[in-house]
Image (cartoon, rainbow, N blue to C red; front, side, top):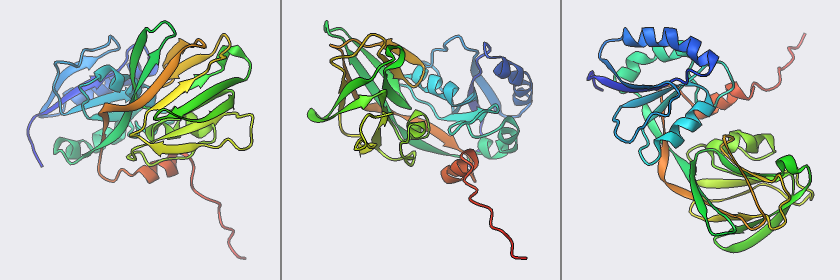
Length: 286
């Protein structure tokens, strides 16, 4: 427990109307709090985190804003506390009202930080040029604009596994297992597991099922006959066209996503609330 000055960085993208409107009241309330230092405010202008130090990064918006923020931090990951502004979110699970209700506990450092798996995605082009991307949710190879079935080869640690035929393939972290992978029929993984899940999108084979394997493996995806329009999508935010000779390698990143959780915050309680796990209503005997 500590009553020392709490150093906060706020990420609030002013280009998004609902964030801009919420930020007015949020900033006013935040600046009125004692023993709080606003180290920096990222208003959507790509703040450089490399030389900044803070106890918490408070992200206003939703899970998409958190995905952008953790990629923006790069190798300097700071604890993130997400404030949800009304849409479905598994990472940003506090409303603005709940944030200020819990703030005395936050100020006393009565929160815990959970380390979550992040990945590095290395895209190597046919001509040998390569690009590296840091991500938190998932890597997707999508038929996209191709409007036709594609064949995607999967190898794990260099060993050929299988070829998936369908609309695409998702390689997801546990955090991303409740995103695109879930909508494609993939399993829900506890967010603190060290594993990847491979989920085919509309596979053209009844035997193709999601596969879960260790985060210590290297996953290689290729589509040697990729038609024009095939796309690599990272965290739903980075989109790159794929060519037949391109190769994708995905591995565990050397850094982890640090999610700050307030007391009484539970992963399964979040799933219960977000996914409507209320169960069937039992009829009362008359």
